[in-house]
Amino acid sequence: MKESKQYDKIFKENVAEIFLTLCEKHFNIKIEKTEQIKDKLQTTLEREPDFLQIIYSKTREKFIFHIEFQTEDETDMLLRMQEYHAILSKKYKLPIEQMVVYLNKIPSKMKTQFLENEVYRGFNLVSLHQFNYEDFLNSQVAEQVILSILCDFGRQESVEVLEKIILSLHKISEDKITLQKYIRQVLVLSRLRNLTNLFQKTIENNMAITLNIDIENDIFYKKGIEKGIEKGIEKGIEKGVEKGIELTIINMIEKKLDNQFISEITGLSISKIEKIRKGLKK
Image (cartoon, rainbow, N blue to C red; front, side):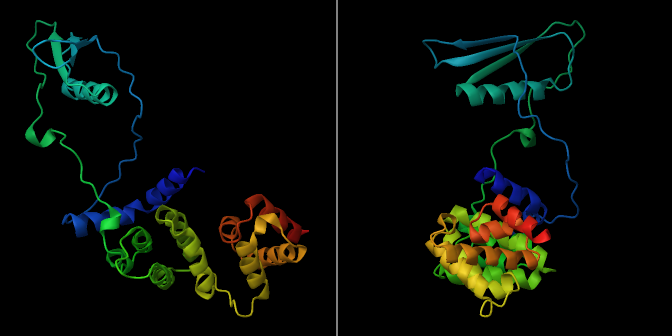
């Protein structure tokens, strides 16, 4: 899966909890209720204009002249022309003049101009890096805490913030599986701030919380993570390291961790982990 799609997946899963905070806290909008729009928006509009030309003139800069010939008194004609305008603007980056030539003898009632509150004038831009991480860290909603990784850490050391995120998620997660899901999401988002390696080490240092493992007594974990990640699991430098890695994975499987999470922690492919998992069932 492409990185951008991984990020999109996380935000689509969590958006219901995220947008409420943004609306209420940062736009001062008091929400009484919401209703989800489930329709998929068409990404490609098949529109063939009746007349479309680039006009060159000595008296003004070049522009696009668009004409539609209309026999019906179409209620949504203004919106249709707006669609044309958006498509043409994006493609040609030129000024546009539009005209509808009405062919029916019955007087038209078509709207030709938008009201003030119907005119598209732009959008609000929210940069998460402009927020202090504590704005989201102190939330009781895990999906909001996750956003802390993308905020401004101020003068705080990155590792300290990452530890706080783990502790906060641990505190509000209902069970271990849910916690692992949120930790995985933070791990993915950490790539956007070049914090992946540091966050992996923070996960290791907080393993007793993140995976419910006593790392002081877990020799296999130490062998696999410390030697494997630091020296290169995938290269299999020594047979002993390879064995340590395999034992680490077995240990994680027995603790009911899923393949995706084990792969992100150890660096091994999901197919290799699945092979080890199947071997345990024989």
